[in-house]
Length: 181
Image (tube, rainbow, N blue to C red; front, side):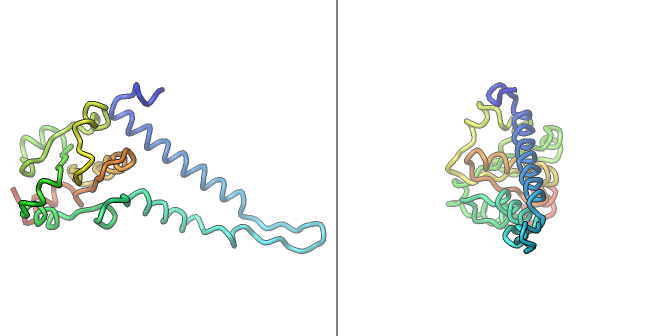
């Protein structure tokens, strides 16, 4: 399947699958190197585990790389509801932010949304027409019901060159915080 011919949701799944595949292959490659052997003279060769960080360290560092954008000033690419509310109160800053809400349309209609947020069906975010609507020069705040789906979406957007963060704990946190709308 060609990435150009895939739908938005399929692109997200393909990119996530590729990331998972590469992570597994990298980890498997490290485990095959993690043994010490005696050479013909009877001395023990140095184990590569002394030179290569542990799988836990690699996984931790890789997670930090994946969830940290080069351009983001937010730890772990998360923005809290109070931080977002404060940011939106500064008139000069509202021009630098794009709120992307991908909650189901029924939730958007029934529960409301953050002022000036744009709704887009999550499965279609990676469609070329929809990507063209997203600004590369603004901070994109990805909003989902609890924040879990938004993490995946923001990850894909960052891989595509966008400056994307996640509303920590999603729209539920917004409804409980100072930005209750």
